[in-house]
Image 1 (cartoon, helix red, strand yellow):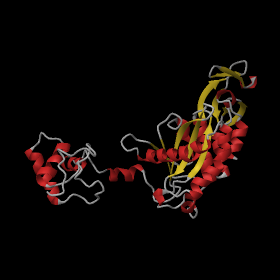
Image 2 (image 1 turned 30 degrees about the vertical axis):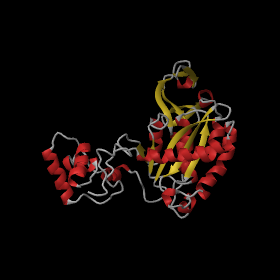
Image 3 (image 1 turned 90 degrees about the vertical axis):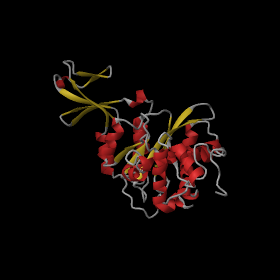
Image 4 (image 1 turned 180 degrees about the vertical axis):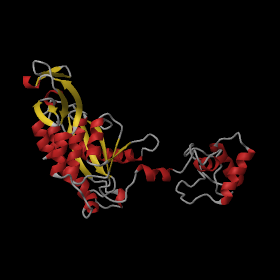
Length: 342
């Protein structure tokens, strides 16, 4: 066994891995290796996979990983993740099939916090949208997603983490409305998150640490040039040095249509409840009274929170709208919709 490390005395480089096992190996186990695993397990049933791997290396010159041992001894429990990955959509073969989105908290030079929402194409690693907001909220997620879908394409799949601003009813309704498959991160196989973590690391290095912004307006002003740099100048390791824009150039895209955008603005809701109009013509919603009109007295109406505000609908017809987001998020709704969606 000349040249082979004794794993009992030399585990220092990585005590969690047998150093004699080739971590880059892709070939399946040989019949001899499978037989050796089964035989050593029969001889030493009290040993776990880690100790069996060590014993096979030191005593029998057979070098297999602990996971390979587990898959031989309990194949149903330890199925290859490659099978599951085909079902769980984690790597797609062309642009605009799957987008990833995540939120990153950033501290500016003046000590204030902002929240960056970025949407990244899985295949090209290009940024489809990058927006910054003063707080985390699903409203801002919707604006960013619609901006990405309008400027580039509606993906077939949308992957996101399980933060409250993503994992909620309104995002799910938007995706169903646009026939996009919702792919939340799963604890058992969170591979998509790694792509966004690498992207966030690059954002901090090439954008925030470079420019030392002191306010959100400065960040917004610099975003277009940063997206140009990231998509058109920076080579992507995952695409063997090609830029994201060169990969995206000839890709088939299906941008959000004007009709789809208007439908989302009109029909997407954050809340939708039924209320009976009182004799004074008012309905109560979230502790506030809204005057619908005495002519509607006794009627049952739908009170919705949409992208534009609080709205009352009756039998599918729009009745009236009031400001809402101006008070909840401190934003000018008409300006935000025009800025991000029109």
